[in-house]
Length: 147
View 1 (cartoon, rainbow, N blue to C red):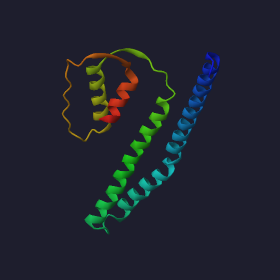
View 2 (spheres, one colour):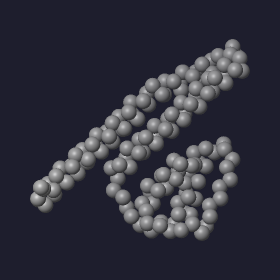
View 3 (cartoon, helix red, strand yellow):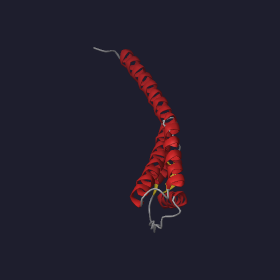
View 4 (cartoon, rainbow, N blue to C red):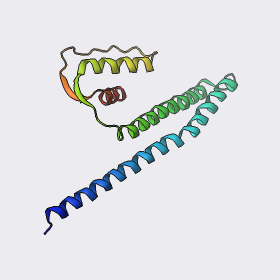
């Protein structure tokens, strides 16, 4: 049977192990996100170059394929941004405070609208949304990524 001191020592050892694993996961996520940037830039750059240099020789279908490559590379870039942001979230200390949910949603909608100015989206945020205890920056980031 474990004594309380032995149990506390075991808990401390497990907490240290979890912290070490979290750091390793954050490092891995950052490295993967960072290392995929160069090949992604190459894909995007070469696809755009082919679009510019060969647009007259390519048919409409081939141009559509190239545009799909460029669009998909852009999506992958945004996904890598999200992965990088996620790696930073794990190391951030949570700042608890009362947060007006409607204000955060409004800010997230504005951020998404700024990021995608060509898309016409009608946002409706209920002004009666509650206040709740949360980390405002982390919750806004989550809403922005979700939207």
